[in-house]
Amino acid sequence: ENHYIIIENPANLSEDVVNKFKNIGFTTKSDGSGIGIPIALEIIKNHNGKLNFYLLEGILRAEIILPNTW
Image 1 (cartoon, one colour):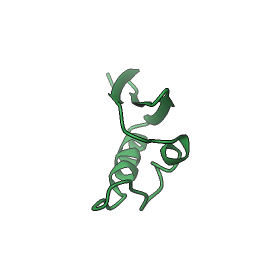
Image 2 (image 1 turned 90 degrees about the horizontal axis):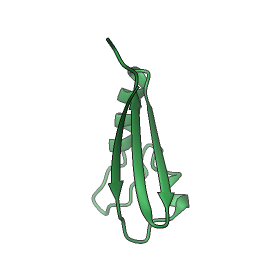
Image 3 (image 1 turned 90 degrees about the vertical axis):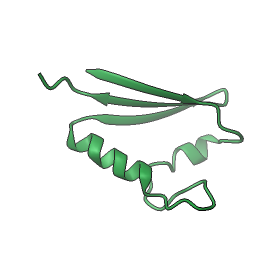
Image 4 (image 1 turned 180 degrees about the vertical axis):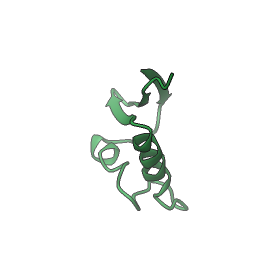
């Protein structure tokens, strides 16, 4: 497996908000469409991968897991 990790320190992010990230139409941006993460998730799933979000002590960790293809 290949693991790709993105770490961010967003302001005022709650676990409730993180749990909604994968919902189509959900956004935290005033000009957002709420389709970016759902599209990425669909692409990752089509490659038999996973997309997970973790919030620990205010630090957001996004983890993409993709299988080896060779």
